[in-house]
Image (tube, rainbow, N blue to C red; front, side, top):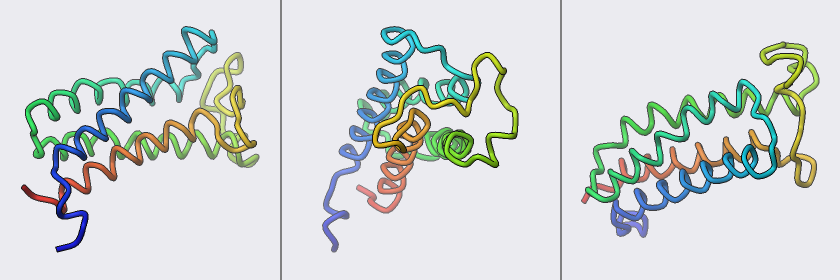
Length: 142
């Protein structure tokens, strides 16, 4: 048996829940403390991330490993949306596709660390980590 098979499912639920809490807290920090107005794609990512805090929290408290299919139905589209948003910011040809309002462009980089870590990058990372956590539950049955 490999080492991953020895990790209890509750650890993956807890990890995913903590990631969702941090992502939600980060998005609220950017909008409520820094007063940055979220663009349309940011709102869609929030719509997908915020319920995961409640769903994963309840799943962790109940040690419900069967929740993974519901979480994956939210986290995978969230990851795809975050990747699309990131492409709009980082790849000039994508920025020609107008999705957001001109007043609050989705291609604008309000926040960037090292030139490539932007808010959609952080969102995509969170959705990816949650997705991987759920896939690890799938491979690891109690």
